[in-house]
Image 1 (spheres, protein in one colour):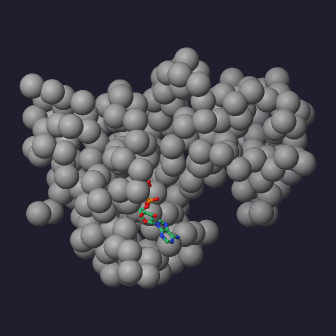
Image 2: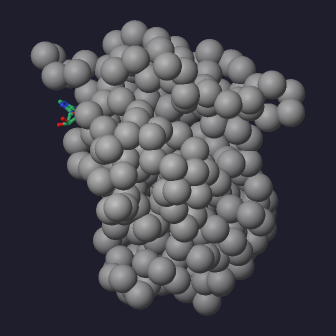
Length: 249
Ligand code: ADP
């Protein structure tokens, strides 16, 4: 079964995963996967640990190559392109900030390696820090920030490169419940403001249902169901989906 829906109005998906299979030695991590993600969509990959979500995200980012199948970004086949050549960026759970650099230098990092001028960097960093409401921490180091602030900085650093697609791997996983809920709200707001495609990996059903335009429920390297939060919650197509979402009737 192809889990596809019409893509954007030009008929072209922002991200298209076509017949992708991924094996690590004997272990089949992802099986015959098809996904089309629309431009501007907040799309979540939800499922238990080990179900293949991160592997799919890493293949979209270009950190892993599919064993077979294709990955297209805005219609262009990128299956064999390096991560640097894709218009995507990734936010990881551990934030991956450089401890020895200031916050401003961390946020500017991607611009520096791309050779953007100092004046332009300062302007873009100012804008990005304002967007996440952290202009006042520009000269601090990551260790002087709270978990929530570090998360916002990781987001600012990824967004400053204006990727067409932002990949987020359990970005709120390290935060406590209260902060997590606040960050969910902020993440959604930022996504609406910038209007770029978000592909979000989580094992937390509540988080996926709250944030997403559509959710793909993963089980054992395959997708069990794709739909709006309401569709998957109200009309689970398999027993696994019903169980995983905690629907009992
Ligand atoms: P999830 O993100 O849903 O937790 P993953 O995509 O991380 O799942 O993992 C899917 C399966 O692939 C798991 O069985 C995992 O152990 C395996 N796996 C992931 N990456 C590697 C790797 N680099 N080498 C070997 N096995 C891996």
